Length: 278
Image (cartoon, rainbow, N blue to C red; front, side, top):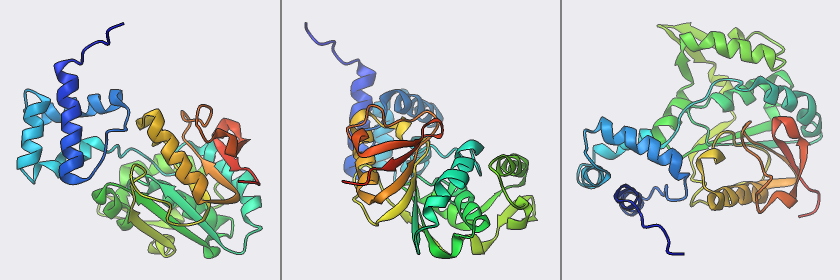
């Protein structure tokens, strides 16, 4: 059977991604095309371009255009204690295992503006593990990393954050961890005293540390199968023996090439444990 020819839009979109990889060294070619098409169509309309080719021309020849386009390509949607049941499962089922280690390392991959890292820092403080833990928050978006380091969030988001924290089994008031000022909530600097925020790409970068817990939630859904396998392979190689991996509610290792390396520890909350033998 003769393969269906690519549409003009498909060709232009593929060439746009090639141009971004070649010029700016950000490789989105392994991302889910359905998601990318939706976001790049929004970007194309935002820039007033009639086609992806026009958008490519703009991005290649106007250095100020790419940072704006980048915000369309990277999804920055999160909240403190998002999916509270996940954090409750960490608190009640994973933390007892983590207590057995004299020191701990936690990697939040795709940390966005830092909401998940602060959630874990608060949880670990409440469970008495913060002082023995080093947190790594990584993302490919430098603007998101700046926001994460600042730890400042809109005040109108706090009621949802507070409700999530309570549902996650929080042992204190969330208000203990931030100060409200000028319409924003500034989270306590001590929450990031043991945190390192850094640029890291699941597409092209290598393992950088041995960790006890990887939390990478709602990132893999934007990757194609090959890139998902690469990312899970990185997590597998980063984890200590019997370390833990947490994914998003719509993500799974079921079809991963690395599924056999893990057991389902808390299946409903998408928490996996690396098997004892590599």
